[in-house]
Length: 277
Image 1 (tube, rainbow, N blue to C red):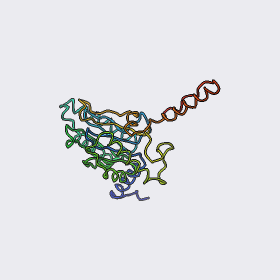
Image 2 (cartoon, rainbow, N blue to C red):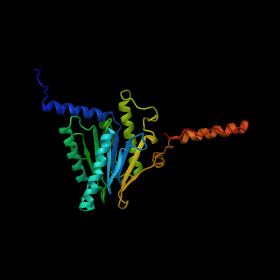
Image 3 (cartoon, rainbow, N blue to C red):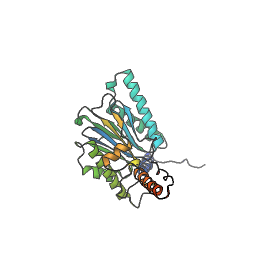
Image 4 (cartoon, rainbow, N blue to C red):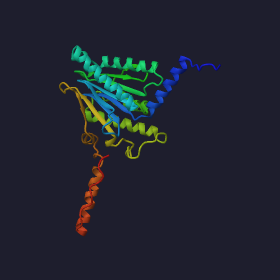
């Protein structure tokens, strides 16, 4: 009779941790940081509909890195938990800390009880009435929870990005300054990962910075009444970064070529340039 397979609990936990860390490291990075007017979310995300950054409740936001189906399940569960708590008790009873505790219990149970852990890192952010009351909670795949001062980095080359953010002061900066600092930190990640990470063509500029169309940006605005969460459109992101929105330069070049052709041959102008992906 064959002996049943046995693995020690320590080995199982070690293998699950390794699996989760490798999966998270493959993902694109996300940054959450405080600035003078609230909390800023910046994530590398080429998708226009599959969001890595989202609203959870009135003054609470959510950001994640890792496998989309898994952190999407967590996002939906968090919204339901917050809505039920606010309905059964009071909206003021829904806080970033209570939601982070809910996520910690959920992730901890999944890590210890299921065969495969969630390959995710998440951040729960709550904007306060004053800068010193802002709260950022960083949760990892095993349910560990840390309250971070100032910023949280998830996925990709998190350590490299964190070092770049530590070198800059963003707590009292404007939204534009904080956004530029976050993008510079993402460019530092690109430099560190050069030659070791396969990035899709067109996601980085010549300086290593993510293209505007590859950024998902949102804020929790301190002075915004009731619902503080707001997404920042690509046009506003490009303006704050001092760049043109993706496709603007191509469209302008196509229009110029069309005018030249029309004046020389009286033919129709060339078609419009490529639209943003």
